[in-house]
Length: 147
Image (cartoon, rainbow, N blue to C red; front, top):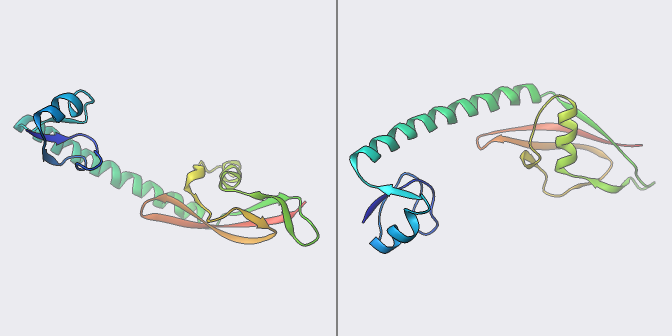
């Protein structure tokens, strides 16, 4: 049976693909969970309209991310933390701390957009990458200073 996938299905295919599956798999799993629809002309046209709409939304989101990146390019954050004499922090600075500081500056950035390999555990100046879109990344300077 030929179906058009409405969502990505592991080990079967990605959204928008036309796949051949057994009747039982289609009837008992894919169709009841609304993961796929029958591969007919009307559904093909609907899928094509949806692809165009998704493409336009993707372009718009990328442009918005680039505009935000331009505004964030010159931002510098100062985070005040308690530290020992050897400049090691009591605790650490995580991605959510940086996102919270950006929110205080007027930028609504999700904590998952902050790309830290490991939390910051020492005083200093750090360049932290923010992934605003899969193709748009910007670096923000973060100053971690002693309280």
